[in-house]
Image (cartoon, rainbow, N blue to C red; front, side):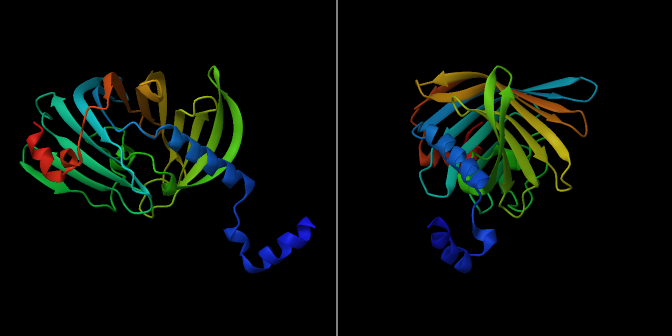
Length: 261
């Protein structure tokens, strides 16, 4: 009976259009993870960024990060970052509107030029201000941005994780694919491997020191991005996060970047 029901479907739908069980499972976990983060409204965090070269020398930067929840289908949240120290980067700010299949909108304010520059949506694979984070890494997660393939379940430290391959659907991504480790209990992203356009491992992100805020929302206290090809790394640590601070849409206008410093 099942074969009789499936046969007409196979005749009219190309085989490439049929989702496999692993694709369905990967997508379902991505949607569940997205749902778990719904309702946070906004948050503000104090952060430290440490840039470490292959020899171990470090440079520290201090910044504030702001996020605003967006409810438009197919879009991600809005976010901005403002650097406070050191003096050579003080006042630098970046604003990101995350999207699904379309390129993210990003604007950069540089105090030296005293103007807001809109970034090219087709060139986001470069390093952000010399760090190991690319401009496209700064966008918030959007389910529609990727295709998913569930690979396996395995131990990740003291936890058990889903291992899912996600493939960027956006044509100008700097990555061919990403392998993510998501813990089965709280659906937190514990690790991500990024593969470059030659499908070679480029870098790895490790998230740790998670804390739960407002009784629901998990955030990593430390995120380390390590470049497998250069030996450089960037460490982001969070010292304080506040939720529901009353941020508004007007706070995330490109023109507002000029007034942040």
